[in-house]
Image 1 (cartoon, rainbow, N blue to C red):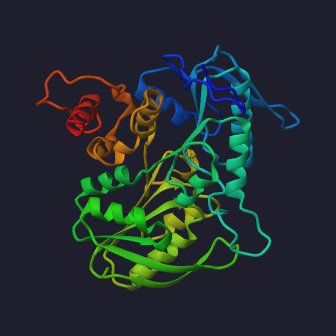
Image 2 (cartoon, rainbow, N blue to C red):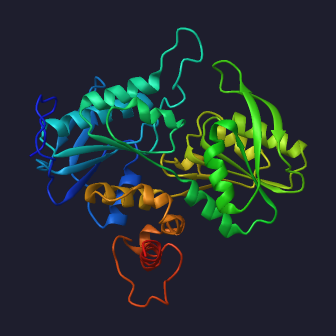
Image 3 (cartoon, helix red, strand yellow):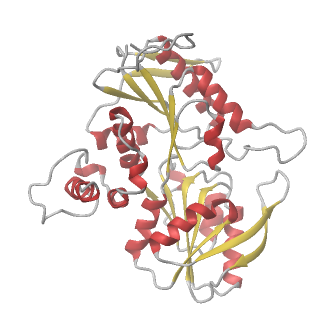
Length: 375
């Protein structure tokens, strides 16, 4: 039996229905469909829309009693609507007696408001975490939070994935000569992992943000970058003002070519125009946030995190390790960089000929990578 919510006595460990279901809101339905494609399953059916008075309505069209339910909803533009959709969805599934509710939040909005850095300001990242918990979520699956401490804002389990291995594998395949990985202090730990996977030195940008403006004043480039090909690594690109300042600083230091990558392509306001006018060769982001057609310029490349999230869903449902994707099975994770949804799912499919693993990202190749990783 499932423990009663808020019950005084502890009961047996919860047992969920054998199958799990995936539902999505309106924030990024395309990512949800790709996750379903990777897992070889259809999305659950639900009605989610706004009335004329802007009130949000949710109705689940399937029986979800005691099922393991995963809700895909990044809190991206329109941010506040996406958050409310997520909260109302969670409440609807709780009242429909779902066995367990996992909120999949590929992009966590308000992540920058994670501390009191000025007098009389809120910690909104904590507020959002409290709302998700109170709504009835049993666990959270997210990706590359602005700061790792946000995990501690939740009183429920949080699994944080990272796109570092997928992004680094993409640049490894490009075969850049004399690369250097560039980041700021806030993302230095994960950028160091990126640099180690890439076999490249790490340079740090020292910067200071000016008040509440989306603008940063660069102070210094720490590290040898002259004559190298720089890859700027960060968790998100918002207005791209900081990114362009870093590009300017690197050009001043004599860098040959400049690339950039980030997990979350927020790309708000003048971001796309700034990138288009810059000397950046390529900007690589993932599909945690949908990229509208108007923002799809030749310099921006999008990689899908659908197979990574899909694999995490499968492991959470089965009670298997998610952390192994970034340690003992990292080769399997890196191979997801080249996953192509048109080639079918890459779940537990076998490989009839182990010597013919197929093209990068194919189901057979992914299956072979996983088999090698878990030996």
